[in-house]
Image (tube, rainbow, N blue to C red; front, side):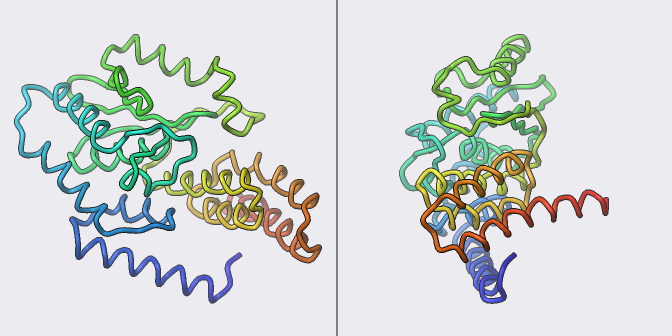
Length: 270
């Protein structure tokens, strides 16, 4: 899947980023993973995260609900400025552009640093999380800065039902249409795979087929979401009808076929 030179460059990049984050900010494993999905890397990201989490640690709150509401509101106010579909992770720190995936990744880092247990959910068109505390569960809807912190259990159920059956036609236009109904838990470290998947879709929308395949390969190594099974045939079809050299087309289609083959082998071994 990757050449020796490609792997060497990847390992060098990983080593450089980890070193940078260790030197210039509090070490944050999730941040180190997520930032690798972006082309733009900056050690200052860790410093910003460190300042944010310390502001919560150094303040007394009368209840966990009050603390979590403060986490939702302050994080949104300081980082999440403009909702932008398929925003890249680094844009959180540089321009304040975000989507549901990158914002959920951001909240997951803050909550992990504060010691909260939480669950991330993936649906066909959305990513969100619920936080678990002694006072109950709370839903973080990152795309709603005003009413996105939800404490009422009934309202949480209503929101989740809306995620599973979005009524807005704009929602479906922005994303790939899938032939399955997806609602499953995602481990925080697996969000890296979804971030790479988003970059693959973004490259596809920009008609950069080669880059789309590269990002899809990276995504599949980390987290083989059902999305990949739906995207591979579409990407192969577009590749074959493109103006790329025939040899390049053949190579890319073969690489896409191997993604599904490798997944089948993994399943059989398990």
